[in-house]
Image (tube, rainbow over all chains, first blue to last red; front, top):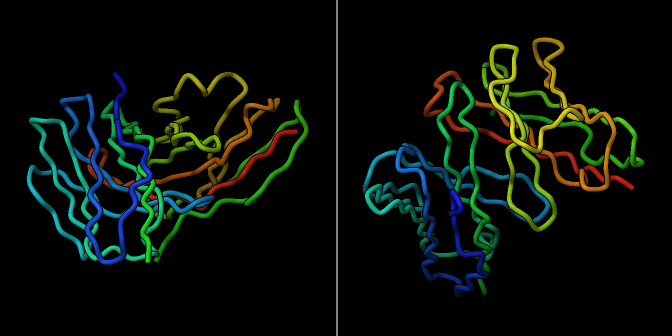
Length: 113
Length: 115
């Protein structure tokens, strides 16, 4: 079983609509979850993180976490063409002082004007 | 706003040559990482570094790889004898003092091309 899984997409949404991205993870002990945005040829850029079950909102972005279902999602409201990118779900693996991030394969989002 | 910097942005080398990729982490961060991303694939962990030693390394990080923090600011990744399959984007990341919660911030990456 893959540690962090995402649908690869592309997820095509019209401008102004809501984009919904999903991520599942295998380690029940995971405590924190990160969403990064990656434009083609660029490095991952933090969008937001979530630690507690429920919703967390930051501007047009909402992260939702359900630890019982091992599921974290990202909603992008009022999608803009500039939101077109690959969105990476990342989960830290708590081990010694390492805390390496395990990434999903990313979901490519395409916002059409 | 503080940021992680990396040099060079693009490195082209011949197979078998040594390369050194350089990173300057955010100044008050304590945890440092290297990741790589082969074109079209997912971001993969290579190594983490804390308190002047490797805290964890992946299967990819074999004897051809090494890391060093030669002074108080730089963090380097050396590949001793590059292979074609080492061609990838290499990202440096750093994290603050809290081992379990702080965010990892990524540098812009170095694109390594091995010919």
